[in-house]
Length: 386
Image (tube, rainbow, N blue to C red; front, side, top):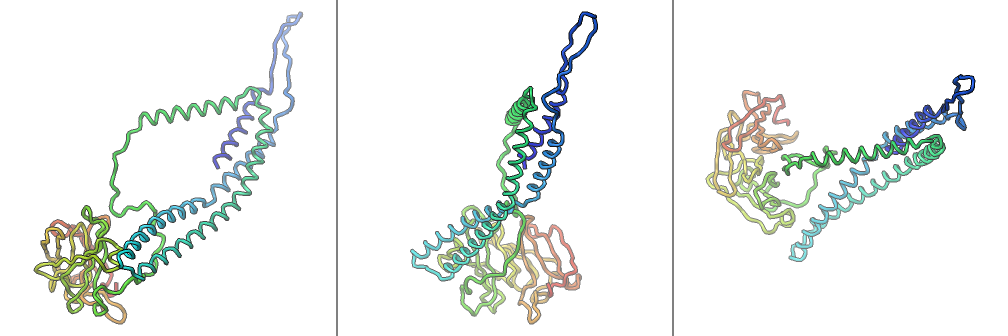
């Protein structure tokens, strides 16, 4: 596209130079003291029609190239690079498990699925490459034709105007680049805000995948797991697991795994017991090295510090609890899911229902220091059908 624009500028320069060279005169004095001029006509008239046709070809070339979605191939390449990096890490973890006698067929199956997805991405990239090649082949012919016509028109540039303009443009670019470099202030390194992503918008959400059965056996149906979005230093790769071990709706043990690989293989874990209270329901979440959950048998929100092993609690005003407003499916309800917790780049959120809001969902932003509510929104979404 840049080449097409450049060639168009050259052709227009020829038209300007033709106007300058169209007439050259030489004045001299005859015996009769009368002044006259001799007109010297150039070898040929400037081919205006050819210049107009050249301009039309350049415009068409520019529009065609601008209309192609060549950046899609670049996006696929970026995705492939990230997926290959993740796959390499997964394979390294699998090798460590295998050498340590912790071989898991589930880990092998996950790697197999990722390789299949990579194969699909490679095939999509190849198809996009072939499509772009077909589109570019016609444009290459057009560019060759434009270049030939520019060469034909260049014979009218008798005083090297175009060459001088090119050199001047190059010098101006060099001077501008030098000034920018002198005036440029190096920005200090910044840490991306939580939730920022260099890969662009979310393209889709796949179906959930079952990797392993419950670590505690098939008798325990409820619990939660994940990793900390804002972990403490040295805990970036940790994963947590909290299973409702007592009557399937409360427990007081958080199991910590040093990596995703050990989480899948169910090895090298550490159990941390919450003192003085229990986790009720599956809405708990880890955030900033603290585990937040619905305190047992109350509408309170609890915060368990994983380092200090201390518990802080505060009321969640008017929140329904003890299975009053759980999440429900058409056939049954999920026990004791009255209070649900989530995080994003803005902080910690609590989702619950109140009688004053007629059982509809209330969304509150929580102050993680003292568990007070920063702001709340009453919605019209009935929580049992959410």
